[in-house]
Length: 208
Image (spheres, rainbow, N blue to C red):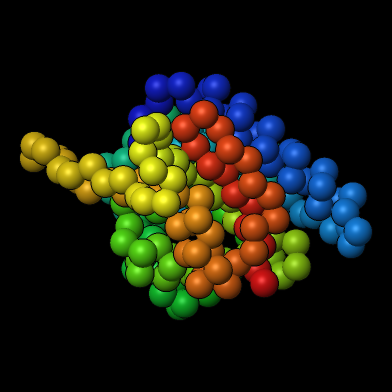
């Protein structure tokens, strides 16, 4: 995730969602003993989810970003003090292999994936979701996904696609809630909590 416009407000929204999920997970019919040691910021961009959400609840964060320039900039953006609790990895999410995940060591208590699936095909999205889900702590780990949703007057049974323009243009898919849930199902994930914002859908996903 790149940029910094509205970062703090978006971070407050994300933090509130995470806290709500934690309350439900700890107080449900089968209460979970949640850990808050390790987080992964997948598709981290400049690191604003790490700054405004993850480092407020977790001890360490691994930032995974495909663009080496953004990965370097995230270290400056976070500053020396915050960066001490972070590890910076330059990798395309859809290319992550099991041996890469094994090299990361201990599993993660949370993986945060925001405004990233929209740049992946369905096939790559499913593969990425499976890979990231495999990094989670068994039974208590959660994968948070936040993506844009189609806006009016778009039909809710069809995705939207922006096509590239200019030298830095890139395809951008806006999937429906139904479409996202199909991807999650194919990746072996269950929606534990879902909230609809003005322009986004946020999901807390757990392994089935």
